[in-house]
Amino acid sequence: MTRKKKTRSLADKVTIRTGRRKDFKKWRHDNPDQVAPSRRFVAKKQQQRKLQAARKLERQQSGPSISIHSPRDTSSSERGDSE
Image (cartoon, rainbow, N blue to C red; front, side, top):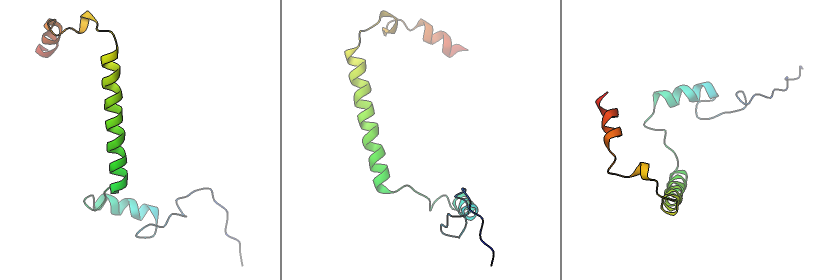
């Protein structure tokens, strides 16, 4: 009886749905409607985005206002749109 060679690769160890990782990748590509993140992951990401937006808003409000960013100076943005 021969010994099985040790491997560091996870590709041969992973057995999901159809057996091998390559099969799972093919299945996932063929069935995009059945592949979806878990509700817990979605909720976690939504919470992270809310926190990130709140921090960004706080940074923007606490920082000094610069005259370059004033709304009346729209000539530079109009030039960019015409190109």
